[in-house]
Image (cartoon, rainbow, N blue to C red; front, side, top):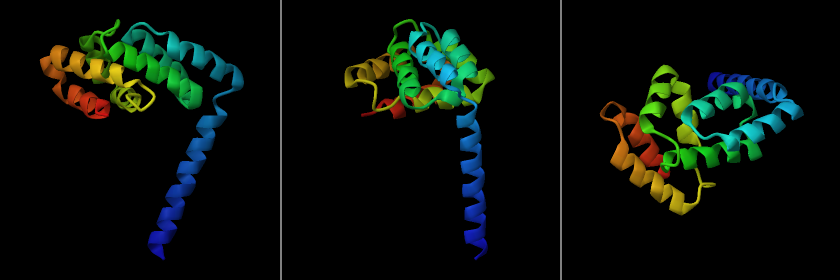
Length: 138
């Protein structure tokens, strides 16, 4: 019975946190987040969009973030040392990036991500690169 009570309490806390986050993303903010998520051309811009719109990371906004992550990781404008520097300062940004290496990214882009990360991973960033490579396996 104690386990059931503990599980229900955790579920309620999670649902409350989710509802709170969803409530913080207005329609106007979601529209702006969707535009920003797919328009980034550097890790710095993606990090700024993440900081501003993380609470809107769902559906079309999430797909826009995934598209940008795929583009940057595959070598189109995204230097891995810049990503590593940002994830060193903010571990939750690493989780965000890895989460967006997902099934919405085309397989040829996932292949390009693997190639780019294997060739260009900074020595200090090996754990980050492993996480990205694990997520990019399809």
